[in-house]
Image (cartoon, rainbow, N blue to C red):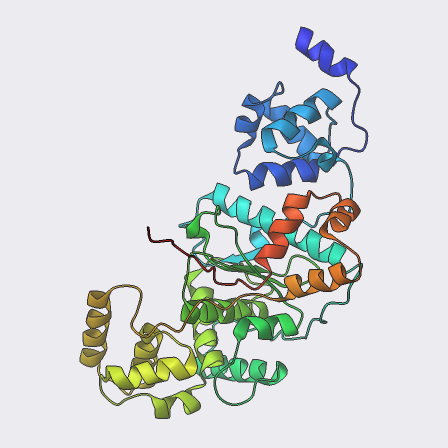
Length: 371
């Protein structure tokens, strides 16, 4: 009773934003019951605050700030934060991903859209190219080939390998980010069009150029074909895989580079040229009809025995560039990340994390001194 009276006497926060409480809680991977246990309110009260049906007092807001590691001002109304519902995001392994991990990843996407929104108040980012080509029912393999070819034309891709998939998406207005390391690796890559710009989020766990390229092309497939399709089914994931394969290496162009029997030297040459993994090339050689079932199984057994990483590494994953370049441009004009944090009422740490996730990674030089 005494604690409740103290809370009431501290005054209600009239400009409290419940969405920001939900955002901060999900970023910390906390259930409402867990957050309530760290404060003096109930889980039911947390729900009411998040939904906007009740407002907390200053004391309770201070408790939330301490429990969630953000300043109390973060919970006050600022620039609107667009929700990204699970139904509007294509997760690669929906059933294998814990709900709390998905919620953390979606919260990160919401913060990212808010950062992009405030950035666009200061700098013009590339306009979004119309790439949408919805599919009806279950398309035939030939239809998926045509869709991939049409997408290459819309994005201005010349014949041959795509030089840099991530930069291509960014050049056409799609924001690409790496998920932060603390997100459950089972989340994998995902994409969404729930906000004002298409957003692709790549897994930081895949330290491989071929896999990062394929993931980016896979998510592009969802953005092209699956705008109004319920996410998560194996059918649409298979369609996105087939799209990615054809987008990265159209069959008529790839086929001359594939050996007619298992030849690892030839496959390594094709891997270097097309930026595809050996596993993907083995699959294509079989699906095109160049290899027998026996040759396909034997090649996969060899790859399994070799383990990961594959032979013939192509270098580090493709990195985003857009947000890092935009903030560098702003910095040169006198607008700092602190200005962006003030304008959006996001924390400086949040702004910094999103910009880093959308910036080119550089190898670190480590020096050791031998005694």
